[in-house]
Length: 111
Length: 116
Image (cartoon, rainbow over all chains, first blue to last red; front, side, top):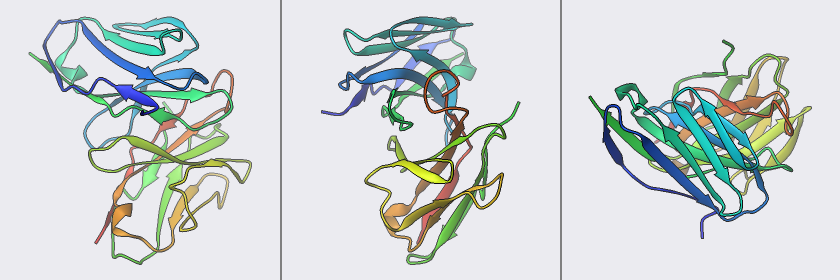
């Protein structure tokens, strides 16, 4: 079993749709949860960062962490064509700097 | 906005040659990392570095790899004798701290390494 499993996609939605991206994990020691956006052949760009369980909102983006279910989500409201990218979930425990990434979900938002 | 920079953007080398990938982390950051991403695969951790020492390394980071902070601004990854399977994007990242607040890791744009 992979430590981090991410919904594989690809995902294609019309402009304005609400997008839900999800990851599950098996390591209960993970405490820090991140979402990165990656454009083709570019570096991951940090979008959202959450410590432990709960919700965090930033503009059109909402990150949710449910540690009891070992499940995290990223919601994008009013999706735009510029949101088209690969979204990576990543996680860390409190004792290490190593981030463990999911495989990524490629999102296309069609005008 | 401060950012992590990496050079070169693309490096082509022959199998068996040594390569050095360079990174300039964000200036007030103290923790530095290298990750790699083989084409079509996930981002994988290689090594973390703090106070001129390796803090943690993965099983990928074998004796062929080394890291160094040669001066106050640069952070380098050296691969001594490159193999075909070392072809990948290599990302440098940095963070202010390792735990607690301000431990978000910010990534550079990457160096694409092609081993022929």
